[in-house]
Image (cartoon, rainbow over all chains, first blue to last red; front, side):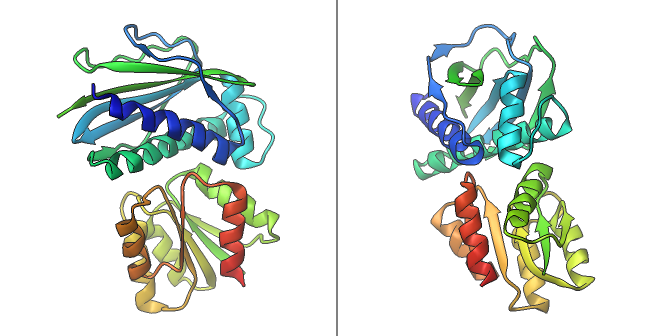
Length: 154
Length: 118
C-alpha cells in the first residue's frame, strides 16, 4: 500500500470530529490489521473504487457514537437508535469525502460509495485477503475508536 | 420564510434544520434527492434552497440547473464534500449562490446562512 493514502484519513478523521461534532481525538497508534474481529459496537463501511480500490471502516463504541450524534444534531441522545446509526454513516461519509479531496489534489483518483452501517458488539467484517489494511486507533474522552484503511492501487 | 432542505442523508438534513431553528426559522420542506426537491420547489412557496451535490436519482447540480430555469434569483446554498476549485466554479456557474464544504463548524454554517438571509 502506498503510505501516501494513510495521512489524509488521519487528518480528515481529526478534522471531521472536531468540526462536525466538537470532539477532540488523538491518534494513538498505527498497525497492520491482520484479524477481522472488531472490538466496538458500530461500524461505518465506505467502499473505494477508481485509481485504487478497497474500503475504509470506522468502528466505535456505542457511548462515543451517541456523543457524536448528540453533538452533530445538537440533541441529547443517550442510547443507540436510528439517529445514531444515520449520524455515524454520515460522519464516515464526511471523513472519507474529506480524505478523498486531499488525495485527489495529490493526483490520486478515487470514488466513494454510500456508507453501510453495521451494528452489534463483536461484529466481524471480512475484507479481501489481497488488500492490505492499516488500523489507526484514536482516543477521545468518550472512548477509543479505530479507522481501518484497506486500499490497493489498481 | 420557507426553506427547501435537500440531502440524501437524514442526519445532514437535521443538522441544517436544527441550525436554522437556532437562527429563528421553523418553516422547512425536505427532500432526499433532486427530483423530489424539484417537485416540492414547483409546488411553490420556497424562498431558499440548501442542497447537497451527490445524491441518487438527481444530483444537487442538476437540481440547481432545473430551478434556475424557473427562478434565476432564489438563493441556493450548496453543502458538499466536493471542494476542488473546479467543483466550486461548476456549482457557481450552474447557479449556486454560495457553497459550504463538509466538514464545517456550526459557526461557519451559521455565517453562510446569515449571509444568504440578508
